[in-house]
Length: 330
Ligand code: PBG
Image 1 (tube, rainbow, N blue to C red):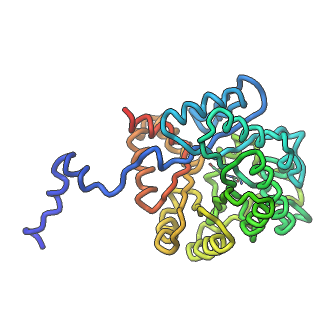
Image 2: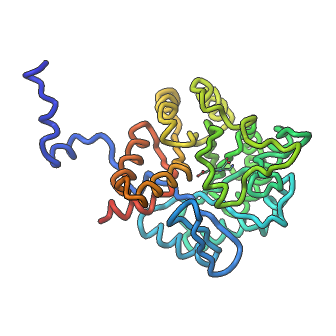
Image 3: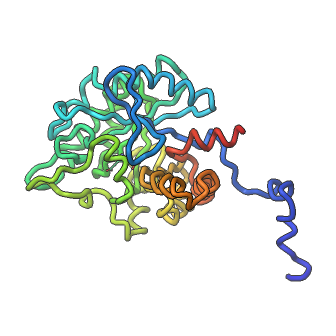
């Protein structure tokens, strides 16, 4: 009790503050999302994500080497698919020589120890821009799960270490796990987007991959019949529990900053590693405010990623990973 107890004693200098600091950010915290496109010599900036790029496979090699040299040892791959290759069932996703499969092989060839995780969902391959198959104005669950399981198998065959289903279909973790096990991919893990909310923060990502739901009759305009309602908290625990029971090795909350209550709930309830995805809109917001000179980019960035870790994240998927590590190293 005051005046015996003066909490400010533990804040009097940087030395004492760092001695009692509870959370540190290190390169080991990060999973780096990478966007891949066809072509040669392509490094195109994403308009709504300043200083973030889509890479063709040749330049992806350099990027992966750079990440490794910075101590960033895990990547999460996304591909931008030509419109001509898209259909309702995402058939191109199963092409053994497809862009994702070649991207996996490319990363493994230049950096065999890099942990390669792959996005599993139909939207980049779907002519309708949905994560599942569309039928009569609905996203059909079970037929989609079958495709997701095949897609996961195809990624495992190409050399992926983890598949990361981001689709929010029911039962997909079990379907994927059984598919992998039947083909003896016992060591290929699953990072499940367990509590993924129907969020307006995904806008820049959909620009990056040209994967937004299309505006057509009989095609749902949003993803609210499968992604979660952002008003819900209890439901996140039910979703996460199911995914763990179905075999998820890592669970995830997405987006990040607006959902840190969910992160702490899950951390306090389950004992599997927990990832948080700080999504494209969160990245874009800070970039825009910094460009206007309204926020100190680096200070806010460090505060944000540290807050995500403090909330309970074991793994942070973030477009800021490289920038953060550069600051840590300087
Ligand atoms: C697609 C997917 C999305 C993101 C990751 N995987 C978009 C969506 O669900 O519409 C968003 C990532 C981001 O915004 O950074 N299944």
